[in-house]
Length: 548
Image (tube, rainbow, N blue to C red; front, side):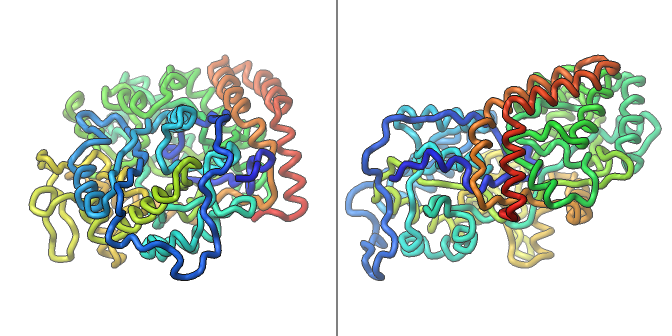
């Protein structure tokens, strides 16, 4: 494999994945492995038709593939050994003479986990992430091998047919074919729950939360009534926190300069507005006072479940336990969705980051030999079959679900038998090929989304969410795609991430009368630490028009 040390952030795909917040993790970008083979098992392109070995009847000798799977710490769920991993082994592995081994990856520390496994030469055959900058970081560390599109198409024709246009458009880095993807239908179940009963106890309605000013007014009333505070978390590694504080319409060059998933915008008026509001909330005791200690989702969730906070942002699904767990502690609790306007200052619009047309971004481990790479393609091909996906997403008919007249799987959420689904409907297994479950008919698909995403009795939450998602569509824009290398992002992002956490916490927790002075001083510190160099390099690329 050619040395690519100078490539670092090709495209600098300051890319997005929804709220995501919910979809991002450890942004550490240190080299993971200095002991690389001199001749990694790269695929050869332009292979003549018919030159591939026929493995349709399985492999003559057993092949082991190692597949990463997120470990989200669901109680009682073994991500590497359960009904579905055993079913996968039986239906795909045994029939193809393949041993499928699942490698747990912590959702909150996935980059660290991958780095440690790579350093120990024990990494799985697929290296994945939801964020393109991190995948490019893996590429720059030379831990991904080039792939051959003809090979993929030969061994995984269904998978290739579903996603080939996306792979061909986004999968090439520095003229090397590196990445392959899961598809991403235009759907998103990330939302923010709010305690409806708390809102009404202070004489307001959820519909009244038409601006940040109204929202803060309500939060003050929550405090005065002794109900609780708004939830909070540590902002790190995933930087879309200030989108709703930007002017609208957003200028294309401004978007290109300051929108970056991996490096925080710390110097614009949008960030100042965001920090000033959070400083106000902190000093007035209406946000979780220890928000900066909530550095993973479970910590944020526990505050909501315990009834100490009245909001919680999450990916909601039919078997998510956040509502039921909250009701155990607060039996009279009622729930609604926070309107998208609630956190937006008056006069601005509910801007957000639009998704690019893929879910998981994947690469093949540089140490994976050819025969295992071929087994990976066959695995993705098998999982791309509609009947396989349907079972992984819904379980066993008669146990996990029944079919209604429209062919929609109606889940039996009382089922606790062997084939019980994980608490995100097994998504961490089938997300290798698609980001969300889909039915062909649009209306049927909408009904299915409501059933898949709504806990029993809370269908109205998802109906409201779908309306909000449609209403805010005009204000969602993807981050810019640079077609020149932005090397300074890779050089400075890890240090700037750490510095951002330090500076923004200091500013937010300072007395209100110190905000202006402290923020101005902190901006200069951030610029001097490398951010100015990033802005200068990006500006040069923008002036050449090498972005979109």
